[in-house]
Image 1: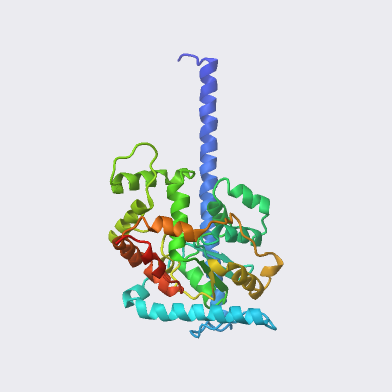
Image 2: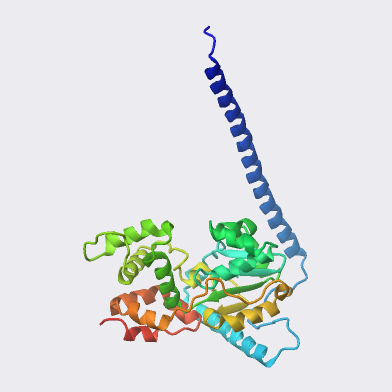
Length: 351
């Protein structure tokens, strides 16, 4: 047998060492995965035990606000009345507009964050103060603002999910019912949110992640040959949304309707905050949830002074009435369920 050269011996040694590290690494990954699964299973079992032994009353169907603030100031009473009316409206519209089959659909638990420490549940609606509240949940988990700023350079959503894994339907239901956690959602005028998503993800080329989608939309829905970067017009983007809905394809989280994305008719929300009145709504929430005001203060991240009234006129005047009607078939329930009006858009669309 020929004697191996020193170079071959070195290469063979490196291969063996690499193999050992690979095996050891895989073992660590498998152990970590197993540990994660076991941890989640243990938490679910613990929740079940707490629910089975809990003397806490289940949330009733009266949809009354119990803010936990005493005594209430006049301004707080006004907010309570507003929040109560929002919940009553949602309940009424859900009863009237959803079919029995829709009401029976399982809730989408994927977009919820649950803080056991503060007994708080939030459905993360993108483009509706989502960055602000991801930051808040970071702070609630004991992290720092510096750590959150660093996460923005990679993926704040992924970093947040390391702290708050996506809950199962069982975990979410237990938190909302027998454990009596407070829950909230922040909604925004549906078409303003849609326009914000379009400008940020489609019209702007800053985010590489959406490059493929931009080109897909442009290639399929453009009426003219184009040269250069794929930047779909707002009209082309709307045609894409209509096509997605007609073919029952799931929407991206940045423009998915609220009532499907957060299962607002299947689940109980204590507080429905509006983006347009967020300062007062959010200040009330921080006082209503025990301990929250001690770690959080009302603030806005990535806040802009954009004049959406002018933008809405500019962009929606690109649409035909047929496009607008088709768009309302997708988002009409969000307007109805959360107390917004779509009437002004009809004066902009082309006949």
